[in-house]
Image 1 (cartoon, rainbow, N blue to C red):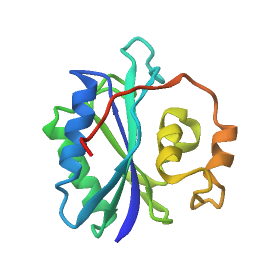
Image 2 (image 1 turned 180 degrees about the vertical axis):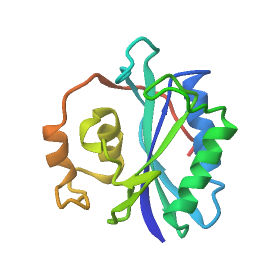
Image 3 (image 1 turned 45 degrees about the vertical axis):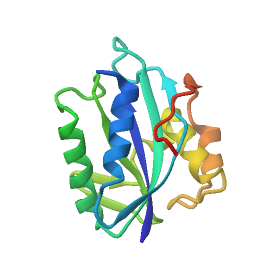
Image 4 (image 1 turned 90 degrees about the vertical axis):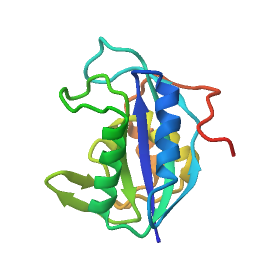
Length: 166
């Protein structure tokens, strides 16, 4: 099993319900176990600012799936939840991104791991550090806490929203 970390985001069609539905579906991925979920954070949009705030979270998933099979599965979950890829950084029902896949790096035309903008996104780093800790070493060799110290600040507010009943 490889431990991977996945980022979740939503700002349309009941975002909290979208995140919960994604977590329920993540629990059904073959050859995989959902280990834990972070808190849910309310964040400002990035890139395209004239849209609703996002809800963001991160999960740890242990899997035996190859990376591209996992990506296909996650994109199918997005599709099932009505994700339409038409506008970069636009509003969306659900966004599911592989952030880290063990300590490996990958560069495919449709996927780069670690996520290429991980170090620039406090809305991703905050829930990630919650579930893996600040001393998590990234494939670059840097500790997560070092990356967070250099990340541009942005509004990230912890909510009391629960993703799973556990």
